[in-house]
Image (cartoon, rainbow, N blue to C red):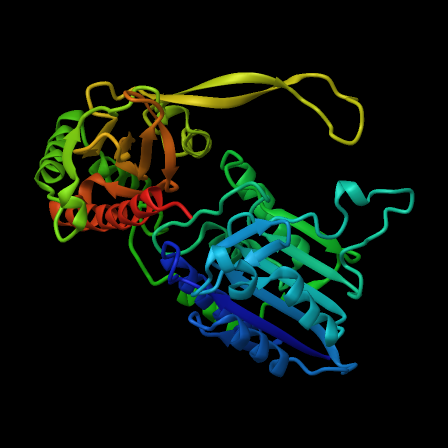
Length: 464
């Protein structure tokens, strides 16, 4: 039986923010699937338009063949849900023309259905990727029949997040795709099953606080083999970890390991000096080469200009920090609220409550929690914008969380939340911190902010 894999990672978008990790994600999966020797692999270019992708997939897969064992589709990029279902955003996807410029989930399924694979696998690393695909609550009846998967003999669909959630990335890879590679490495047996991957993903993301919850839909017996770990797979996995010397190296003694850790730590005076340099860099930043100069003045503040914006209660931020608080020894305290446990399908058989994190506070009180660049409009008829740089500290590093928030007029003298970007974050290690690293980070983030403000300001004054 022949097996086919289709890989698409879109990192650059004409009408949306760039996702640099997505090209790396696709490289990771292409390397792994090629190394297995199981699949014939089609790597679709990241700048391919919809009609090109449809033609490439159709040409790649044999039609009316009885020899197709498995078809696997992998995607990393922006995703959007609407009444038409899931859309995979392509390089030129325009939300106002979503159906003609994106690849719809059902369109992809229609192409795959024509070749009638014995097993159809879909791995999607995108925001809002989860869909009630095989057996949603609305389809439950006495026979628990499958509706959407009609035409497929067996299905395994692995989504990076629930329909209402975002999917997150770090500097190099998306967390979900990297976790798949980690799952493969964690399995000691030669045989890697799809259920092994699913179990690992569930455990690792549950332990992170539930900010991103993988979603699985299956129509099979649960014993399906992903691949066997051959020498090529082992060599590929090893290539992802170049030899380094750190505190976990087996050759180091316990004493050396403790000393190495302490060498990374800094006291509050050292960190305060770093923050002073950061504040100076933000104070010295100037809005240049933009028409916004005509209408905005920029000022760095040590508090958020709008009191009703309580960033420490932001759900996504709180959940992430809660999941890392103990493991990374973050200098924060988390506040919880109790909610009653419920089962949506069955009346409660188990009573009780669970604690949900709702806010956090820094306990590094001697250090600033936030610097904010305030884009103050010279005319109150234009929206204001704020870019918070939120700091969370640990003994050896600090996180910086950044987003851009728009504030529009609610009345003559009041403002309310408008559009915003999602939080992105970076970790700065104390022992390797230098001003040039921060400066590059600051320039990148604030240029993204200027692009966002230019776009949303024009949309504000000329709504479509």
